[in-house]
Length: 222
Image (cartoon, rainbow, N blue to C red; front, side):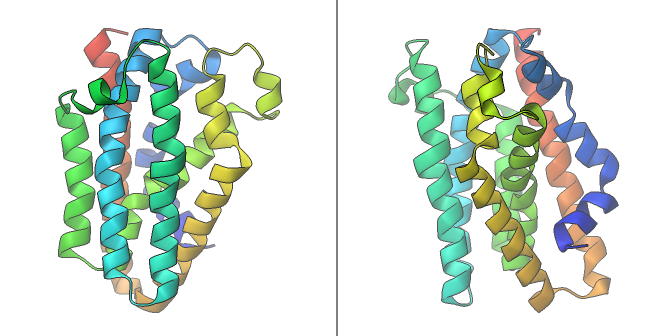
């Protein structure tokens, strides 16, 4: 069992509240109101700006080139894959990148992103990557779960592009590499005594992810 699997097991109820949230289930079923999805996309774009900063911090905190390259991969996934997806989807509703970026951050967005940045500033590289893991690795798990028969089977699905991005081979590899790097960091820096602290960070990040989904439902009355 690698460190990610151990963290998930230690925070199982918080993890399930995130990956099996009503927002996710309704998106998978195609019944999520478009207004809720649009609200989420705008906030997630703002979220990704701050997460890009977190990965830039991980580059700075890297102890060697391998650590720095791993963080760069996460940064590139955000800047070159995820943010482009958001711009493309929001463009369908006439929202420009400038309009998205100028939207006010919801408190749920602020709470989650600043928590992760604080973990990175106050802790070491392992703390930061544990706080980042529910997002980057969790979205890959959600993508796989929502496309059990492959992306091609989602023809006509209203959220095919979003699901396909995270279920696709490129993002799945990013997540697999992030998971492997997290395991390497744990092998180098974790003691069993420290595991409880890391599990608490992971659990909180998972709860903040669930709150992020819920934000979109609450703000749109979905």
